[in-house]
Amino acid sequence: MSLYAIVDEFERQILKGRARFIADLNESFKDYTINGSTFDLYIRGQTRAKGFALSKFLAWTVLPNYRVAFFGKILRNAADSTRKSILELAEFIRAAIRQQELRWAWLVFFADQDLPSNVQNLVEKFDVQEIGIGVVNAKSGMMIHSNNLLGKSLKRYLHVDRLMSRIGRNDS
Figure 1 (tube, rainbow, N blue to C red):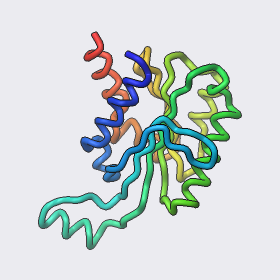
Figure 2 (cartoon, helix red, strand yellow; figure 1 turned 180 degrees about the vertical axis):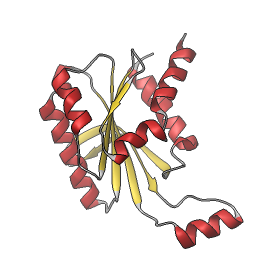
Figure 3 (cartoon, helix red, strand yellow; figure 1 turned 135 degrees about the vertical axis):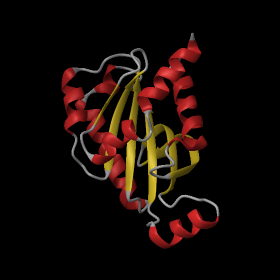
C-alpha cells in the first residue's frame, strides 16, 4: 500500500472518531501549507467533544475547549529524514501553535523505511510539551514516538500501531 493511501486511511479513521478520547478532530485539509512548509495532512478541532444531553452538559461545564491540531507529513526521501528537516518542521508547528492559538499539536511522519538512528533518537527524546511527534514505518507497521505526554498519547489513544496493522491486513 502506498504512503498516500495510508495517509488517506489515517485521515478517514481520525475523522470517524479515533482521537475522540483526547480531541474532536473534525476538519481536515490535504497539502496544507503553513509558514512555507507543506504538510500532506492537517486536521484541526477542539478538546471539548460533542455529545448528547448529559455528556454535552458535562463537556460544556467541566472540560476546557482548547484548539488542537494534527499534522501529517510523508517522508519521501533521505533529505526529508534528517535531524535538521524534522527540527525545522517542529519549529513550523510551534509557529502555527502561536499563530492559530492552538493548545497543542501532533506531528506524525509516514515513512516506508527505517529512519537513521540519530533521527530516531531525536524523535524519542523530543521534549517540547506542546508537540507530540511520531514516526510510522509503513513497511513494518511500527511506530516510534516522543517521550512526552502527547507523543505517548499517539499510541495510547490514537492506537496508531493497531491502525497500521489493520491497514496491512486490508492490503493483503
